[in-house]
Image 1 (cartoon, one colour):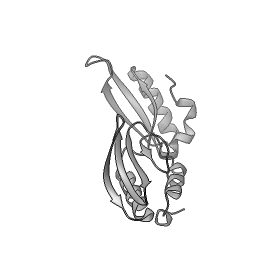
Image 2 (spheres, rainbow, N blue to C red; image 1 turned 90 degrees about the horizontal axis):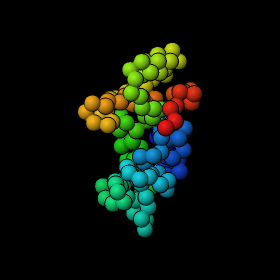
Image 3 (spheres, rainbow, N blue to C red; image 1 turned 60 degrees about the horizontal axis):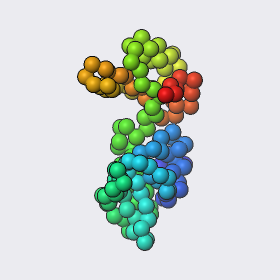
Length: 144
């Protein structure tokens, strides 16, 4: 399905999954999220909203499902973080280099960042795989 053919929430959900977008930050077609953006039909009026800590704030309203879905698709595609699939967090630079080397060897696009995990003296590197590269790294996903 091409992007211009997407007219319903179900089609958008299917497209996102086919293109390996993790669905934990976007509620499309009713999936539950703790925090992020979502699309819902509320009495015939479509709402694009943001939710955080149980509070929902409507950002945009749409009269038709097609307009709402096209807006959601454009917004999600513009979010550079939307198609990043988390595979692990690492303290050791050596372990990070091993994982990155393996990703490069497999030709898999990735993104990393460093965060102060346990304070300013405890930095960790997070590794994310872009899009459907996640299908080829199941053996590298760090559990726990």
